[in-house]
Length: 142
Image 1 (cartoon, rainbow, N blue to C red):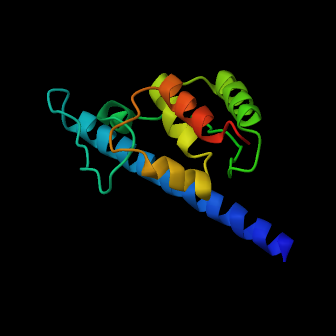
Image 2 (cartoon, one colour):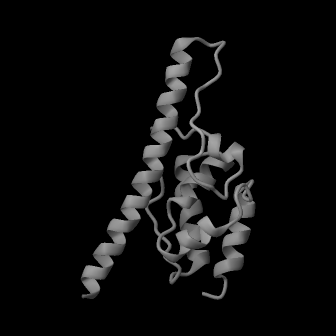
């Protein structure tokens, strides 16, 4: 039963990460299509389909398709400082701007931590340091 639950949680985390990457790929395709149409035209961006804690600058940031995201997951029962350390280490290896770090950090959250993240006010998160501060405040007791 525990193995089945762990497998189910892993599948859920993979699904969330896949959905995030699919959305980013759609944005990249739209940006490339706009670039092909002419440099004078503004990139096409889809309206947000649901509220997000990220500011518009973070939402609109494009992540390179060659960037490999972190391979860690935080469900709320792990050590939050260890999760942040692992995330920072992996991001240091692949690079990425503050906005990219925000988006990729979101992809490491699963279960109740994703519920916490999506419960933040719309447009509230404006930087990665702010996101890590909010994360620490929420999960420091762990």
